[in-house]
Amino acid sequence: MTITPTIRVQHEDFDLQAEVDHLSKGKPGIGAVVTFSGLCRDDGGTLAALELEHYPGMAEAEMTRIGKLAIERFGLLGLTAIHRYGKIAVGENIVLVVAAAPHRQAAFDGANFVMDFLKTAAPFWKKEHGKDGAAGDWVAAKDADDTARGKWK
Image (tube, rainbow, N blue to C red; front, top):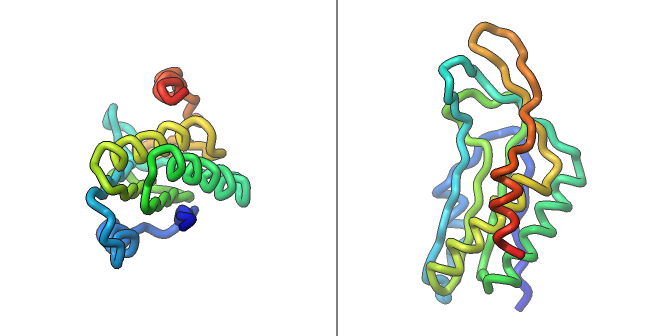
């Protein structure tokens, strides 16, 4: 049986529990479900929101490619990856990864793998918006994200 990842790029928020329920319902072989939900954070007390942009069509294609790799590599029984775009306020959801597998380690590894590749390979860009109303800079890629991805070679 071929497992196909559920991939969405959307403006609206997502319901984490509904996504878990949808992924796992009627699949008795699932013994572990791991979720990762990334939120918009304000480390320095000056951020009001992030503006996320993506390359339509390419973002979904790359997320699908990453999802298929994770399913094959870790023997996942289900995978959902959702990434939001638009202006997202501090504390709101940005990304969700749900990985389901027969055992916990595969589910954890699958979710980590997907996030490490999403951060470095999927065409998304973030721009900061300050509490003072000023639009800030586009957020640069981080070397730590490349290092995290490198562990999967």
